[in-house]
Amino acid sequence: MLWPKRRPRTREQDQAIAARVRLLNDEDRKAEASRLFLETLDEGRFASMNDLDLAYLAGQAGERTMAYDRFQAADRSGALSGRQFIDAAYAARRAYHNDDAIALMHRAIDAEERGDFSLAPQALFACAGKWPS
Image 1 (tube, rainbow, N blue to C red):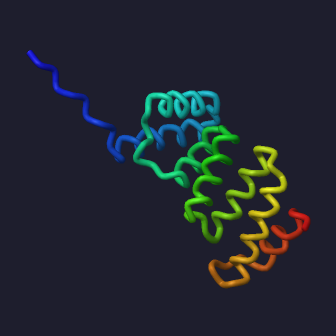
Image 2: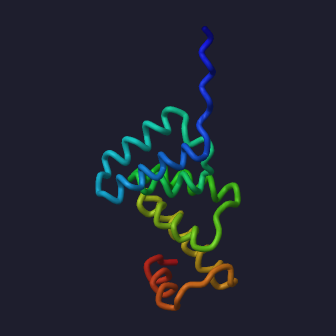
């Protein structure tokens, strides 16, 4: 008897695992979230997810360096815009890439000034105040 070939993971399956990672994080089971994320990634799953989605998921799994790396990859491919620059800046800061964090926050402020997205004046002031020139 021939065994059927394994079907590759679908986006829906990847999303279900990602939801489990997020749930573990929300339940403050951070070590489990990290372990599930890394094991799943090591198994070659999450192939259906783009760099930006993986950046957010890595951050939720507590994988700071990987989150930063994926945000950088998303930026190189032109996938970052608007508020995502802010998220990428915080990921850079958490991964101790402070110069990149400052540059990303400046890009977020520039995008807001161009009208690509809007922030309340207080939020814009807070962003500008935390990130020296």
